[in-house]
Length: 279
Image (spheres, rainbow, N blue to C red):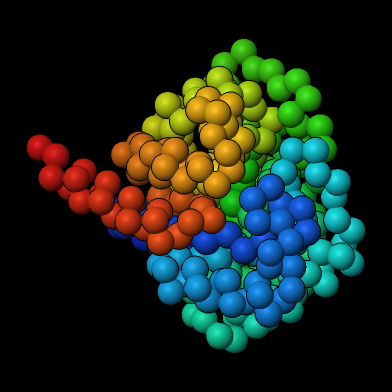
């Protein structure tokens, strides 16, 4: 199984890929404002690379529940200087976390090679066509509605089955827009229009998505469902995040998106070493 993103290619089975998060925003739930300055964001990205990140995911528009969207101009001003600087200073793959076609196009021109789309439930194909034209990679994430309203009253009859049906539909639509299957990664969207119970059901059912024969990505890093289950403060959620990452590796997930790269790399590599000795 191969994932292609412009000049980059990952062929699985191989060690799981850890994606480091670089939020260039004033209001992201964990590190909002810490890396709003481009120089601080670039320094943070380079630190994550040194810790073992193979991909940096740069975002300038918070997708936390209830967040108001940034304007196109605001998002461009935040992310393009950071992407351009990182592209000049590191050889790892760069991902743009955006839902806007114009931002994706500018980010790809500045050096990004992947578009991480939390709005893959969209009805138009304009962003997918940008991805297709650039030969970029695309992360297709499930969400039940936009960030501003997605946690109002999420409801499913069978969340694993419904997310799988979403992927089947989107894979067809995205390929019709010109993006080859080998350029697509699937993300179940933990915390995006899901209750605690929905999130736990998806984590327990991650292996079900292997039937699409596409790599899967998990992003659980320090998310609020951990607090809802364990009553932990934001700065106390790393152990639970690592537990989820290790379970995901055991279920066959290929990409882990995290704020805490060094700790996640250790957890993932240990999990892989243990799994390699199963009889």
